[in-house]
Length: 433
Image 1 (spheres, rainbow, N blue to C red):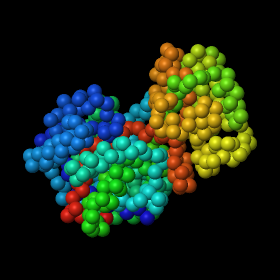
Image 2 (tube, helix red, strand yellow):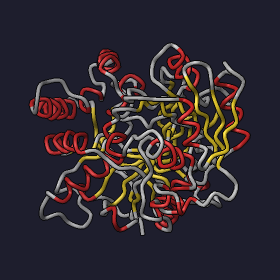
Image 3 (spheres, rainbow, N blue to C red):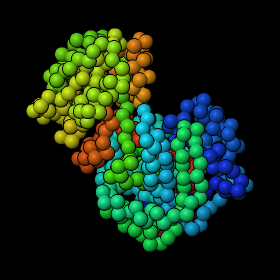
């Protein structure tokens, strides 16, 4: 069972800073240009801690010193009252549509090995990012950036408990997202949330590297009590059964293959797909509308010369006997991303899993129209468009002990860093929920 707990975090003193000027996206989506823009917004922007200046390991010492100074100056202060922090993000979906509010809460999860299937990953991680974060953990003894976990609550039993909250701050970010943070201190509401999440396994939506880093840090920290801070990781929890939890598509733009032939691609795809050509020069909106109508088991392949085809899984296709898909667990070979990677990228185009991990031949665009324009301008060789992967499919794959291909999910918007900060101090304990 999942063990979660309320926070007694460090938070920015809102009498000294404007929260919208000191928060930042997760470290791994911040470009160098955006890093400088965030740092210029406010002397205390959290980007200076999660992406510190300096060369080599000196940058981690820089983060430690800044963090200590900000605490000494009272910019970051300890909230001593155990609480969950409800976090609402209201946004217009990419591509347009009516505004949606994603509701969740910030809290702590007890760190357990992934093979226990209490906290389940849905993608593989790389060693480089984990080592970087581990060095930051060691230097600062702090977990700055939350991960993102999904619990299962199809009956929405926790909604009422999450309503027991006092608003702390509301603000807009430059991407047009409205953020609202509220504090839940009601003891009965906290117990309801703890008990409700305990009944579910937890699926990592985002922050795989951060969770595995926290596990590594805990394992190298000796003499910890059962509720010591390093045994817990800061997470944003959301209901994976909430209809307002949207998963958007990440497409595949293939490039730099030694050879590529459109007709050979369609011939190879025809082994398991029905191939239906589009009229030449159709728009991305036409392709996406066709995918939306099919809902699942469909892809669109686009060529740079304006040709495109809808690929729909053949009725009665026996994927268990396919030379690549047959090696996957049944839940994975039923997903669109599994069909693309193991039904086309590997066996037809020769893009091995090692090549996929190295990202040597694939870009992962999220804007279909922009990617199609780039393809037609001569960038890349073929663009594959997909629907988003439903959360239920991701959970099914994880529960079978398998992981999805890279970039299988796109949860928007990103969870901000800087709303709450969880320290990893050996002598501090986590409150009992």
